[in-house]
Length: 358
Image (cartoon, rainbow, N blue to C red; front, side, top):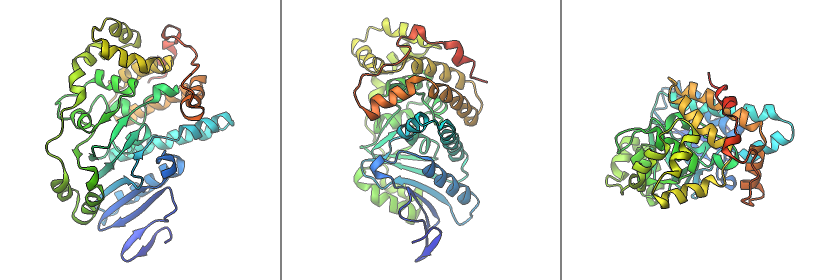
């Protein structure tokens, strides 16, 4: 089948593309189709999704959009930062910058999409995968789903709008929290279904065994009927709820130096050990930048403004050696021995980061 062809009344896209787009029964369908890379986003995928959404937003025959993965292992493992590193090392900084610019434009377009946007997430959701799911109107997870932001480990910054969304999401807990947002962004904590509902990242949970049936029900009967039939109305207790008071005590501070001081004074030894295990492998510059950008983006009026801040901080970090070193350590050599520079919080130039914000 060719791009834009009609077969048996179904508009469909080329089956070998990294995102297969089609329209069926009034549903715009985005099928992530890069299984060997766990659907890590590249420029082609970003452009296909954005172009489809631009078309469907104006098409009265499309009533809703459904995005999902055809890989049972996961939804999306993030942006293809390994390819970005290779481009940068090859001297193509403009190409790297263009990818992030286009990716963030897509995040904003999903946020502004005028029709129901159902993100079906079964399995891994990391980094850039959050940017193509969190801004949808309906965010459906399973017991196999986990969401994590591991950017501190690769010398980068929490991005794709999560510095905005994380500190504004409200789930069954009933309130948003900047402290919780900073914790999630800096510790690479893996939120599973109960946490995702409690924090507000997810709106619904279904059983993983029902994913195929749910997907068909969305297309055939609409998202509301599908959710009524398959959604779990009795979620488990969120593990995060057990630690929220400690998280608020430690992470509710404006600077990373203050967070570190609060952690040193925390008497929850198990919590401290768990957090420090991650921080030992994180870029000090990224940790400081995280506190600064969450504080800055707590004050912005729109996702677009937050993404603009993320772009400028991200460009700054990509121009530093920690990004190349972090990606090398985690994704290329996988040696778990990053040589970040500077290697202590006290040596990070906070003022340089603060000057990036508008």
